[in-house]
Image (cartoon, rainbow, N blue to C red; front, side, top):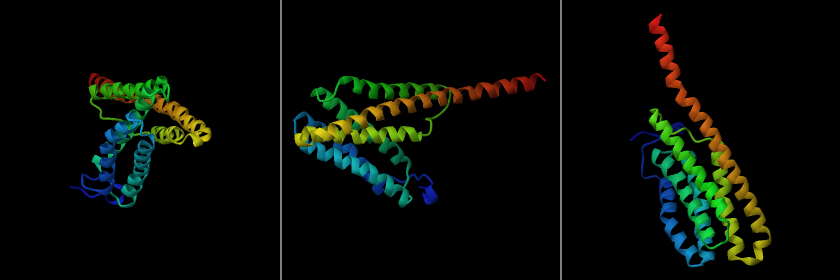
Length: 205
């Protein structure tokens, strides 16, 4: 077990930020069942709790020097599961169009392909880009706003426009970040070839 002092990444498992991330993962099926049953108010509560804990675990991890490798996996995994679950659930009930689902899911399939390319060249995943974090933030907080109008129709007049603004802008940034990752992937996989070329030239000389 390593320490996490001064922002270092720790191997610890049992930390409060990790527990909050795990709680978000456990609540994903609960959220889906509530959404499928039409219990929009309770589904909104679960999604709001998840949004709050998403913010809270990041704050606590940084403030208490509890940034862990497990947390770096759990946190984005929980975020994506909620985004997928909410979008698919809302699209299934014809509350949002399927094209927004295809845009978001298609981007993550694109990222998966980039990950496979990197792995084939012997590289691990690229560091998370700040733009990707901003895009996830917009998408993650657009969903409660879209659901708010469904649960409370009297709030629909402002929650829907604001929610859709967040969703569309988030989807755009999501793909913009994906393009940045693609450019960085192409740059990284060229490095070994450049090195091999330099070594070869050196040997010939």
